[in-house]
Length: 228
Image 1 (tube, helix red, strand yellow):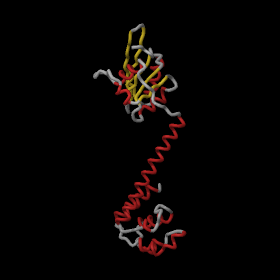
Image 2 (cartoon, rainbow, N blue to C red):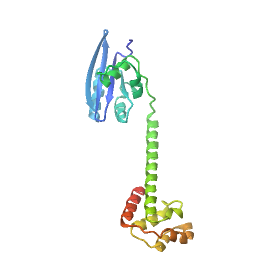
Image 3 (cartoon, rainbow, N blue to C red):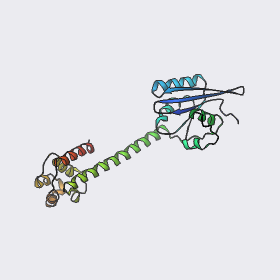
């Protein structure tokens, strides 16, 4: 089979280490060398320096998890990198059972059998990360707010039936007072702001619950996380 890249490397990336298999073809003879490096900055710098010294022009790795990203950033300026879908690598037939992952990756790379995955630009990746983080935080907050509603319902307090946004200014003021030990519906309802003051009687009725000490503690802790 034709060799496309005379000197290239297969990388098997893990959380704490990366196994590198360098394959070089000279005068029709193929030579392999396998080394293992730590994935901290010093280890990845040593990996990069070794590959540069060996005049490695291409390297490939699977795009599983997030561990490959640091390796990619450390090597991208020094050689052509192939970040490949793991399912694509598994789908290529002919692998022997005793061959290492790094060796199999370099075998496929050297003969042009790997297809690069789409790699977003640095700005695109940053935007992706921020968007995903925001979505996760919004979901986490929604779960916590639902937990707050559950605590109130278990205490017989029907705040959400009167206030559409229980995490607004009025809702928070009332819930913090509940968490601090205030049980009087009249005083709690008096904490409402603006237009909610017109619903004073409804609030008094909704706040006639029986919140226990453990529920007040849960409410205080949940509010602390949500409003942090």
